[in-house]
Amino acid sequence: MRSPRTSEVWRLGTVNYLKSLKIQDKLVSERKAHQIPDTLLSLEHPPTYTLGKRRTDHNLLIPQSQLTKIGAELHYTQRGGDITFHGPRQAILYPIISLRSIGFGARNYVETLERSMIEFASMYGVKARAGNKCETGVWVGDRKIGAIGVRISSGITCHGLAFNIDPDLNYFEHIVPCGIADKEVTSLRRETDALLPSEEVIHKQLITCLANAFSYDDVVWKEDPSVILDTKDDE
Image 1 (tube, rainbow, N blue to C red):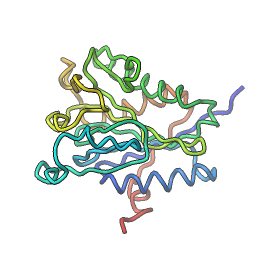
Image 2 (image 1 turned 45 degrees about the horizontal axis):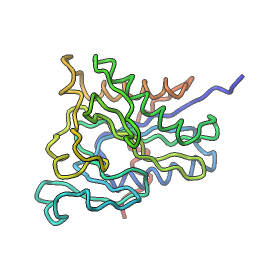
Image 3 (image 1 turned 180 degrees about the horizontal axis):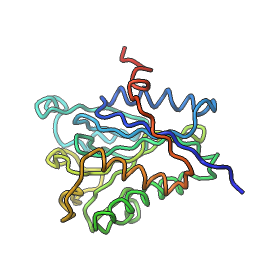
């Protein structure tokens, strides 16, 4: 009989990308030291392009000098995956999970992230699927609706998934999303006829799908985001 699984959830609202990296670094260290349980960060970013550790700059289709003109930032990260975009009205989940404690390998972890997004999409009548070979993330037909980019260090995860609720899809025209050419990007707003609820409700629904996919027995919703946002102030 397995031990009960508990996850803490922090709803952080809109967070600068570099700030979110500092928060994740702190939580990963605390999870490695068994000071905290598995933790899930739910948030959004201002318009931001991020590149994975492969540094595929050629998939950014505009000069970096023009990014400020479109109100976007660019950051290099240590996660897997290629270039992607984060912005308002996109639900981002960063799980800080001990894979060893739940008996998961990297592949099983990524597949479970995909299943959580597929289940969430189905709530709105959208039939999503996992990507084909060399296509991580979640797709509706040949249109990508959810991206995945993770980092695993000593069995502890960070970074995670981004699901397009209703972002400004024009930002994706400036990149080759996830390094896959000739594929469209879509959103829940475009794919469903259902009336979308508030962003708070949507984030909670996606969190619930992820918690179910990982078989958490108890999800603790933390009430004061300032506690975690203030733990690592920008220098």
